[in-house]
Length: 120
Image (cartoon, rainbow, N blue to C red):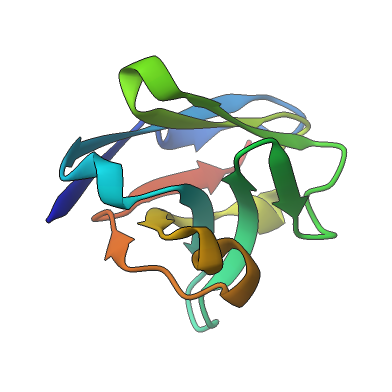
């Protein structure tokens, strides 16, 4: 079993930055791909960014503004969010899975979510 613990959400200003972190605990040898998804009120959960090995994938809406990275020594994945927009407001979820998860977008483990609100 794998537990994912997110941190770093909160209130950000338009044009500002926030950094999310997700630490993995437990049977971490079972996971390879990790990613961030988000769900805004009244909307379906959507992919934000994923990482597997040296490959990354981003939603078009965040390309050039968000960066996903991973520290394998700390079993942690990060999401650096720059040039924030009000439409980035959502609950952000960390996800982890097998190598196939990166291609199928079907992840085995999920964090509890962290709220990101972008507002002046």
